[in-house]
Length: 171
Image: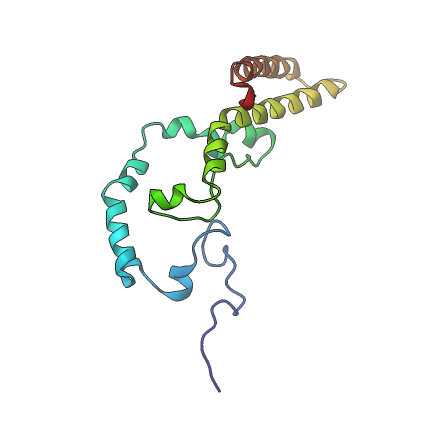
């Protein structure tokens, strides 16, 4: 009989069983036991990436400003799971900017970046409005509800001002 190990068919290939954090994580290293060095062009690309862009991404000075894109405490507190605000091109991975710019979804990707402030502002406003509506519907209101209602009304007012100042296509 032919006995070739079938890592994908052994029932142990789901992302959490492989030690990955997400179903979209790359499985090639675990399933096929390959390394970037096994492919000279990939190895050269990795060296070039490590030399500059990767370091720049790791030391990005505005990383703290992007925290709401990941785990904003308000979304974690009120909804438990924050929305995914990251614009993306799906699973497309291109190192050559010229090829990337010729991709059919490239303009939509840029547009989603331009619309990100409005999208985030509307998401936060909806989150706060939903919580406000819930608190106002409670009778009797729990202790501290009036303070939270005032805080939510202030955030909604700030977001209305912010959204009103955006270009019409982004409101």
